[in-house]
View 1 (tube, rainbow, N blue to C red):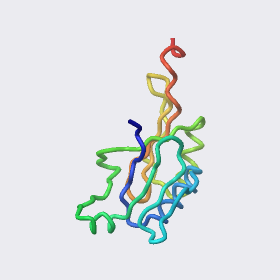
View 2: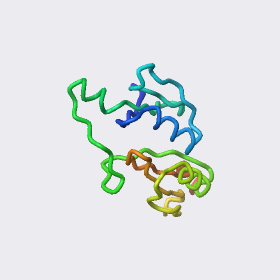
View 3: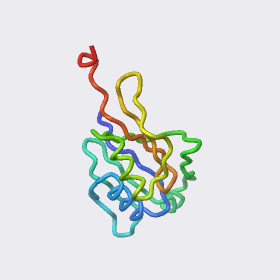
View 4: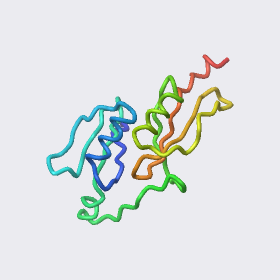
Length: 132
């Protein structure tokens, strides 16, 4: 088994791909010619976007994400979380929480993308052996 995709449902796939490129430096891997599906190059697990319109056509009822009352988040790791947050906000993200040092040694901040998805910006978690 491999965790292959996280798919976010959005109004405008191309706009979301452009935002994530500008905010986080993620390269676009694929955008379907119809504009209803796209992917970013994020490493081992693909971050993809599908239009809510397409999902409705498939008989589903997608809901908007709400960063003020989230039921999920995506997390992206950076060596410099404050710089990552500045870049994201300059690209149109809404700041949700300034960078904080967590008790387990990780630096964590939060922003919301233009679609309302909560995004954690964080340093990698050090392996337990390295923490000792």
